[in-house]
Length: 204
Image (tube, rainbow, N blue to C red; front, side):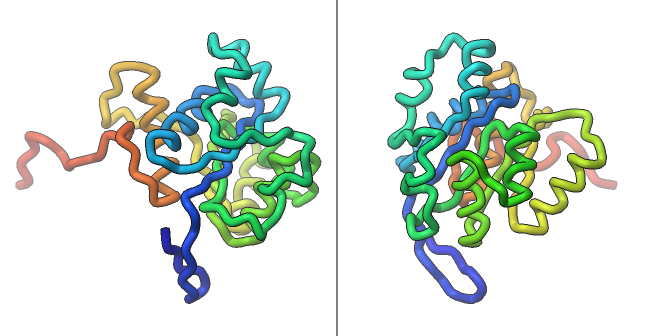
């Protein structure tokens, strides 16, 4: 996959870092891993302790069920892992879901775990960082943090339901959000229902 970075074209390996933090919506991370497996993209997973708690509350999956979906699993405290270095080339990173705490830590650059360190690396290397932030309503501090991250090059992509796709299940809504997030890396997944224009409407 070729990217144009400041006028220079470089080729990125089909490798994506996936972070799962403790916000509600762990299914977004699960389905991201499933999608990457289907697409043949190597996944590097790092999960917070809070995310494992959320996994036990929101799904019937075990931690092994989750980590078994990834190609490579990194320990949260392993700041010497490959994904902690900019010399380890990737397409970027997605945090799905992204808690406000994780978002805020990335924004400050004062990183305390491998998840936030890996995200900081992606930003400094000018790679794509997608944060599927799960929080509402948002106060001014949240919004200012999102603005700061956007100015730093991150993409804030809250997982909102695309009702135009007329999803028939929660799973379909999750897949649509995951697929649209993967679009941002130039990855086209079958879980996305594309907009094909208005049907049955005649312009006057």
